[in-house]
Length: 92
Image 1 (cartoon, rainbow, N blue to C red):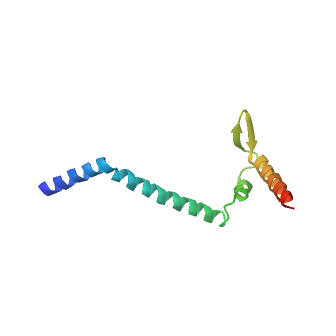
Image 2 (cartoon, helix red, strand yellow; image 1 turned 30 degrees about the horizontal axis):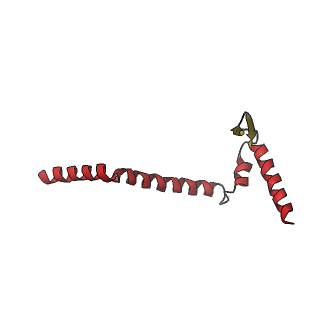
Image 3 (cartoon, one colour; image 1 turned 45 degrees about the vertical axis):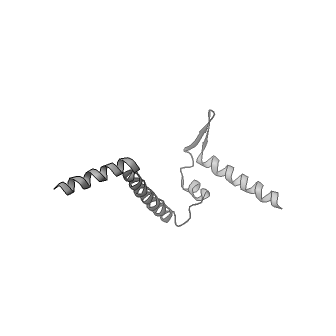
């Protein structure tokens, strides 16, 4: 019984001193996040590009708000396409 109490006290001290439980919790959260991202990419058909995400979003829903102006997902998609076109024209 004394050994169990000593073991518990030692564990509590080490956790308080070195933050072991915090590290273990963060590792678990990272593992869960990776699994969720992998599952979501699988739902997207293996393609998780910005353009693909913009395609799947509600085109009329607001996506960004900045300095009193908002952009919908549709407007962002158009902006991305125009940026992509101007970049490809710059290379020519």
